[in-house]
Image 1 (cartoon, rainbow, N blue to C red):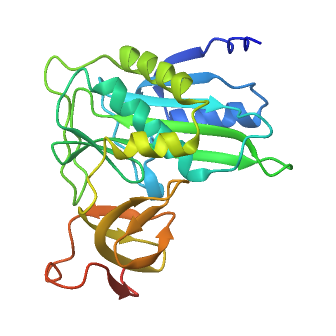
Image 2 (image 1 turned 120 degrees about the vertical axis):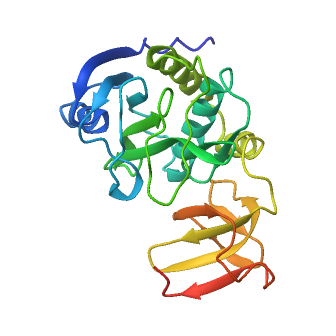
Length: 255
């Protein structure tokens, strides 16, 4: 039997908001049915990962989408950041070469940060996702400074936020029903290759080693480190002075 087409996305565009992410979360908490996208030309209080401020000058993408997964959908936190990363990569690949995904939520252009992803969600009483908000910021026209990290924007003529938002929503729909294992393999084909040195800052320690792929649910694997890592802040390369040490170096208590 042919499955019915999902309802159309509703897109709300604003000249300025404090945060598209906060606006989408407020809509979810007010009972919005989902498939809602919010775009702002500028933001005054945009959020990045780990509570950082996300600069949002005019011409860049400030975007959040509210989804309500099926009640029986499995709770797979890693899936959504990978899915959003793939959608963003596909949306921007017509405008620039040299794009690469970096686990868990960054898009790089020639090694510099071009875009980032922020996921907010709430668990339903049944143990699934009650709602999910995917926030995406991308430097389409300007590359704001991020302390300690190189940044990049699309080369001229760039892309409009409206065009990229449409491509993102199309990408979400294309990937929505794909098994997580397929999303993982697709993500790996656009990411830093196996063997890339990584340094990962978790809540309790720093772990360094060679990237060894992902689990089938999207956790990162480091060569020589037995346990998969489900969250952390990732930097390409190893800490200074460790390049010739064992493949996975554990630095307990590091910041």
